[in-house]
Length: 220
Image (cartoon, rainbow, N blue to C red; front, side, top):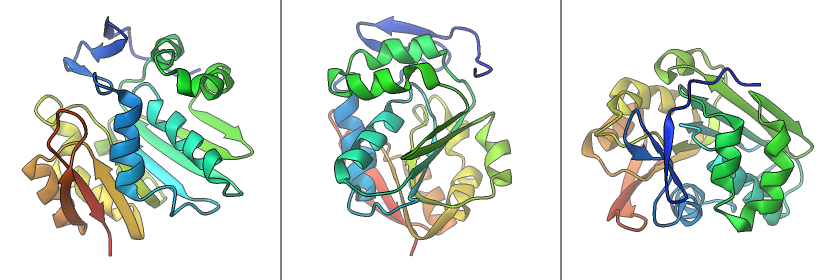
């Protein structure tokens, strides 16, 4: 199983919070709806899905985004395999992830399917998943792939600025296919500027819940 960090979350109702960053792992309003709004629709999915479509992510957290992406893939009816790579410095324990997933009955069947499989790799007929452990500033430059879409889901830029550094946003752009995309819940100006400097054309659009705006990007 994964080489996990010590227990570093606390539960506030059904929402896990990082004790290191004092930030929730997903929206306190509705984590599932947030992922669908920000990352699924923000990357124009599932319309862009094709066999081998590759999603990459900064911030694996509870694995909720992976569950929703795979559910969206299966519902789309696209034949083939979804590729999903996530970069995470502070992985949760499987039992913590499984507890978090119980808050989303819509994903119960899929969460039950993946519950015994949580590891750094998962291979299913329709999913190839890899979790890259460590600081993304070190691991992403050595990643030899390019994604079709990025889910930028680190903790708040105010509390975890390292994962939003311009140099890392440039690496995200470098590891994005031409015509690829990115989306994030934050609308922080320095994040948008970092993505633009890396080569993304960015748009500020309506955010989810209490967040007025979010950022979408496209690599022309």
